[in-house]
Length: 210
Ligand SMILES: [Zn+2]
Ligand SMILES: [Zn+2]
Image (cartoon, rainbow, N blue to C red; front, top):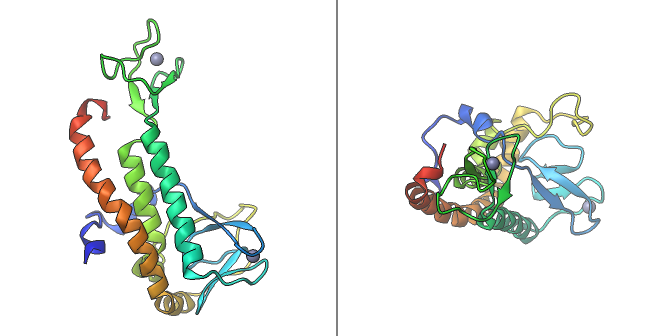
């Protein structure tokens, strides 16, 4: 189906590198207003994936599917508006001019005497990778095979106290398959738009690329 056709050709091992600049998905519990990062079916001090969905550890509220998809969609839209804001930044560290204006010389910095090159602060490639990252969070196969970008590293203040074993992850992935596929279809809606634009803008703004 459509979900598979847009998968990148590179191996999933490349995901961690690909997603290194991607922002985490922050969810808010609709019941207790606790905010936490969602990283798929992983150990977390803030949420549990149980057989019937996503549960807040603070108040035990179980998110309805819509409570997840609507927050995911809001987050995607905020990334898209950042992208559309079209901020450009000068690559000369001593200059650092930030503007939304594209000079008639295209990539030349507008600051007097600066020889720096203006680049998109939020590039189409970054947006595309951000959407692929959200997609990966709800990818049952990637969850099952524990191929997701880790949310925490040992030493982090929020590093999970308990762990989740491989067989639980496999079972929970299957039990939440419908929920996850619904979320993937939300991401997919924007991803296919973005992929098209990635190709179009890529050729139009060729001069802006690295
Ligand atoms: Zn809660
Ligand atoms: Zn400059």
